[in-house]
Length: 249
Image (cartoon, rainbow, N blue to C red; front, side, top):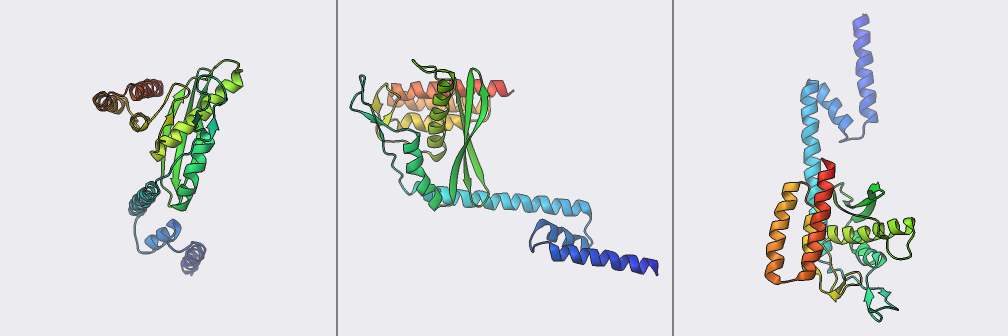
């Protein structure tokens, strides 16, 4: 009699769990699998397979959304005028210009961007830009540099300047955008599409081997187009990436 009572209690407990577990949730699937006689190991393997399937579907949705975003042909408007110095009368894009340009198109396709300060040391800062889709998939790009200790800047202003600079370029890198006549931080005004493209690829290199391969391919491409400014930007990105990867070892 006691065994029958215990079995009824277990059945009641399982029934209660089933009622509480949302249909299609991992708990509901596990309960159903247990009732069918599957072992815990088999259930674990089944759940791992489901996780991989979900991740694949989320990546597919992300790729479709990103392709739709790129079709929007986002144009970044330069909103900052230079009022003094040798570049007086010119303009350039600041972080807010980039954010205003990309956010509506990203949101339209279920995408959103954000940043995180992933390294904050006295002589080096790293910013990571995340691009997420509502389906759950996420991509990221990281770039680093020293505090921008320019004339008249205190320590906090120097760090804020670098952080803003890195946020601007990581957002452009992960969205694959560049402006016509992009600003070069006071050096010259020109089309930086070539340099931005290779800087973006270098930012995504996750091993020293990948960075070396990207460097070799980029140098060959840039040399063929004889673009000195693109090479300078790419060389700096390569040096920054090597430093980060060596420190991470």
